[in-house]
Image (cartoon, rainbow, N blue to C red; front, top):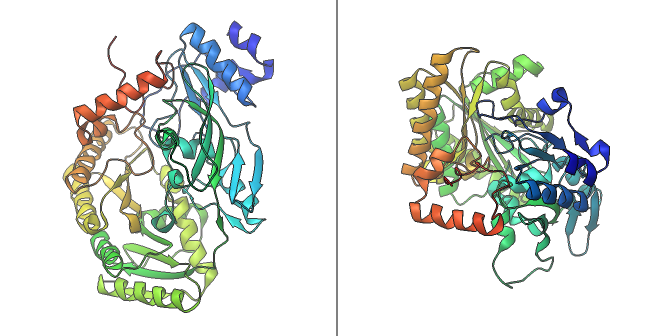
Length: 457
């Protein structure tokens, strides 16, 4: 504490127990967390470097944190650590409309960046459901995806350059702002998705796209998630690349409607929401193709929306599903991703896991790219239900791998998915990753215990 107070302005260091407690975990309610020594909120790269160097001198763990919207425990405190929050590093440093990139500090909120870009006729595509609250630093840490990533890709596809404080307390710049560049290893690609275990990001340069055309929306009602999954498979087989293809089941819609009183229709067990942003006749053709795929998949009703407000309400419900369901009881959030052709089978296996373990599982999904988010809900205080949910959680991860998928598509490994990582990756690959960690963080102070457990000394 003395070293931190000597290195930083006093208002950057939080030591009050009540305040510190509000920073000890992210939104992964079931992930464990410890008690930090302090929380620091630097405002510049130099202050981040000062924190890391002080912690390095005293071998004190550093746990980087953005807005705390993560869902894997990746930002959870460990005992005796310093939680380093980048929430006050909020500057949009530059937007270049010619080269089409933006330079931002890590505390910039995703939607705020998107609004700043829109003012110049530009667009930053990655849009996680938490975009009104999550920050670019956290998006980089987990390689966040989102609704439109089925067509436009995830965070890693847009990060050109990073400024990082590494585990030796050095400030380094990784990547380049040019359209092309192959000098050395792809250190930016390595850093994106590393969950704060390899460095603390202090500046991000992201690629931008021109503003896109207004979207057309296609809505389908289905009697089961498996039928909706068949429609998703049909969209892929038809060669259509929607700008969004989202699945929301009745549990999610009911929870959102009860919370926000949005007047949502509950006439179906599952709603599939498709969008296309192709311009002119091409967009009309894509919307019609999606509509045919919905019908071929077994939709009880499907139509191209003629009411933009109604369509937007359904997409808003998709974004609000997680916090709405949180109100019902503790949530264990899955994040598996499978090939599109395996979506129906994976959804069937999720339903089977719910029945087998007597657990309520609500389903939302970025269905167009196979990224499924089953939400396991347990009554408050029900220890037995929680144990059954944890069994189902493990079964769903193993089923995803068995179908050629992965245990996490965009939330990260953090604490909740470490067993899944060990199941998905070979011992040789895990050893390679440990070697990278040891090279960039030789003293093991950066977010220890996350992604994979630290080896015994």
